[in-house]
Figure 1 (cartoon, rainbow, N blue to C red):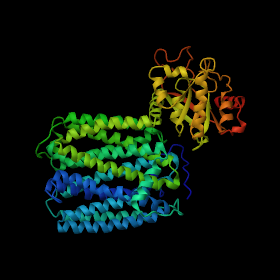
Figure 2: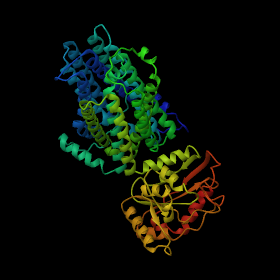
Figure 3: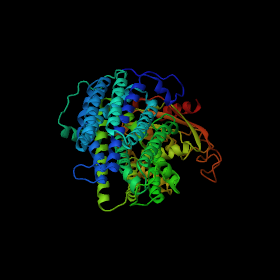
Figure 4: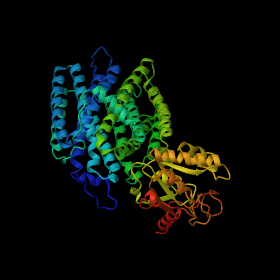
Length: 632
């Protein structure tokens, strides 16, 4: 189907809530999340505070087991239903899913009135199964109805709506579980009504045609799961984004699964305090998700991901030091707890963990949707759900092992925050693009105001060469930060000898080069690496002037670009940086980066020209094109 065109120059993400292409879907998924959390949180609180037992487990282990039971279907069945999401029309599929939810809630009613904990756990498994079916459709549908520059805003609204639903579900579920009257009646009535409302909103979701109607379904969930996971690894950045999201769900599952016990044994709080803590976490994620769109200016800005990772560690570690107590007895209500000394630090830490969680995950979801082939997106998201589920199941086992080793719950939070540091380091060193964009984002939001034009000229796949004027020491950061693909830069070998800067360019895979009179072997090696990168479909950027401009003017282009294209014929994209001359990183004062920066929030531009076929490439022609862009 064709996507509607957004004609507003700077649309607010909230304008999507007025449009049929988004609002019914938004409401449907929010009501689904609401229902899941009313039932799940009520059940967890009943287990933790009312002494429900099953399978011979005590309340601590049973709460953790309940989290595992809910997530297990994601691991078992996501691959199968990812195929179905790509093969069939999505709006009708969602309607069937919502009808199934009504049936599951009828079973929940039966379990509540029979006071059968095993049946209620089975319902929890079915709710996880229903979410497994819905997940690939949910994230596959968005790119079919939203423009690329709406993906961050759309995902932010979905995430914030989901966690606001979690917040309301937490409050309602906790309130129902704390009732002294007929809990079974009020809980079953609530979840049944909401499931019916969710079905009614689903009927208004616009038609969303299948993206792969010819797909032959592999009904074997095990072989399809293996195939799905192998497919994910074919796109390195997408796979690492999935690992990042999965780690966040590990991290979040550790915290959420232990909130009831943390409240009771570390905060001495009653059920209302558990509800408050869960609500604060949900509010934080909603705020962080919405804030993402503002921080990224509507683009898929993965430079925010390291910021989110830093916050997740800092505030998890501080939460331990804010309150390492354990072995307490629940005596305080929410209002009494708020008045205690040290409470506000705990509250601040929990809210900030949520905020940085939203900043961490929203760009990763948008990145997956942007970088994945539309015909495989639902299966990619199904693969994401499989890996998410695996990490969440492992998180449950992780918590159970630490609990069995007599770790306190605050100590479990501390260990998780420390592990987060190493996970982030692994992901970011494997995909330097995250760090490149992080540094660029910091530069752009302190020293510069950025405007980029015609970035769509850069091919979405296959090898190409970018050529640009060379104005400052941050040219590569700006280009790498704003190009939608990872870029291999060809840099003067002396830069690699500079402290910090040289190490950074090594990490991002830059290619050192030297003039023939200085080091012929290094020059030959550079051309070999460039050819290898282009043959593998990568993007290579060179600065044909060979050095930084000393007067702000465009210098003569060397012949190296012609040798590169003659050896590996690929298209060339000319581009020009404007506004950087006179900055602290340029040589406008004779020497770059001397003294302190004097210009802040200066306007700069990255202007991209039209793609030039390999057969038309000459150094003189490229120089003309870059000069025209620079002077435009």
